[in-house]
Length: 219
Image (tube, rainbow, N blue to C red):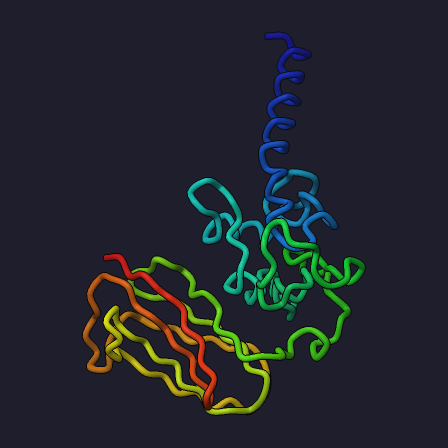
């Protein structure tokens, strides 16, 4: 095969690979600012720290990015700012198709430790309402992470219930400052016994306010 022909085929293959990945740009908030460089070093080069984390744990079976609270709260490039802070969606509330959140000029690259956001923490992180986010992963076996935002100092109960409403596990949190927190449930009940596969509910309670999410354990 001639060198020119081989070079042409390599260019076509590279172009096709880049095109096949372009859809992921729109699956993270404000992905348009850095385009493919949000997850790669150089245009379509090796994955950066953010891209590696997505590839390892945050793609569904179709290759779509699983953007949400779990990925938003991580700091992939260890620069002191979470992925969500850098992409102007600190709690991972944005969904594909929603308007871009925050301010585009303040977006920094979550995979580049030399690119950090200048926005101040208190302008981004302080939640306005009590919020319990979907657990991740879900379905899970045996461990899942429950993330919640708290608008003011309070005592919270995070209760795990089985499908008929019986309490399986309880966690109590004494929150001293507004912010976003997380609790890992390892699939054990109060006696330390692993629960069976099935549907469970997590209920976050603060005074008279409560929120509930549905979870699925598969063994």
